Length: 473
Image 1 (cartoon, rainbow, N blue to C red):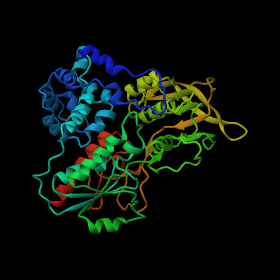
Image 2: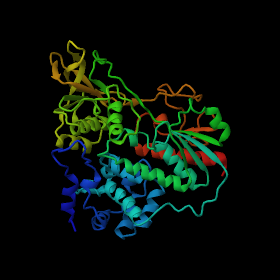
Image 3: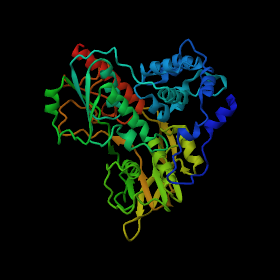
Image 4: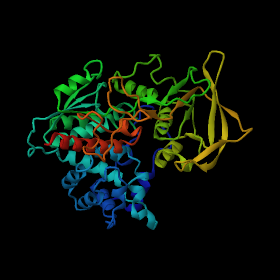
């Protein structure tokens, strides 16, 4: 059995060199020695604080100390049931949540000079071990209410909403324009962070529970919202945010400039043949980054996904440009660490000015300027200021813009919106996450703007509770 220090050394490690673009560098590699003994040892480190900071730092308020105690007692089936009381997608959150900024970052052990309990790894282990033991959700006690709810969007919020509804006897009928469930879990997050079979397995579990899935259905084209409203007792909207934020730089229309989402979707689509994203150049399945110099603009987790995907696709050099310093990056420090280990160069305190093209209107470089951080803005973040005379050009062949996503509500959406085009609804109202239309509820990025998967799970679950209250079942 690994001792504690050996385990901590193991989880800090990721290979320094990527030998193959087909390689999956995920949990199955890093945690291949994470067996029950190691899980018990880590779970036993929990101090069981009187006020569990880890639980309060978790967006779904996961009963973390409770299931850690059950793991320490080798009660995996009890732990998986406790886990599902708050989280509908624990196997995904265990893999992709920024635990270093959430539960593990709040672990009391961090304040005592010790490493935090490896909560994310244990969460993932519980689900995998329980399934290996034959676990499946038990709904034999659930009685049908005869109510039906249409769910538009089978991403994290929609899946979480369906999970709560079906456990309360309400029939969820999910519609998604994609050929598989998961939304960006399936089509945007790289395989080395979240294996696609994990999402498909959860979809199959939900189907066995009684959820109905309808794929390749575009609401507003293949079926209209009025039909969904008349055929169901309520409708939940969880379509996410897919509209990329532009850089608004001179030269952004040059060949070789690509937004992060099409780049990541294309990578997933090429490897899994989902048929989601139609490439303009079918002879360049990986958008032509192999053997080229790449610049990624942005400092969030999507930018890190672009960095690490480019490395795997054979880019000769990957440079990440971010206008603030490392401490002010919005993404997970763990993701930045992995990118550095894999060979990504970071240009901190550097802002893009324009994209430079050659005589053939192809990218050949990006003009940048050095920055310094001034006083904080109204949100508490220090504002970057350009330093005069510090302009320079970074040579590159491809620029990937990873500035995040914004809501793009469809024309058929007849509910009140906020100024930023997110849906106007909240948890603190008579029926949680009910919109201005009494039969329509919403959650996830359509309400939040782009946020964490675990936050979308929370809102999907709370919206389901609001629907149940509304239906009086």
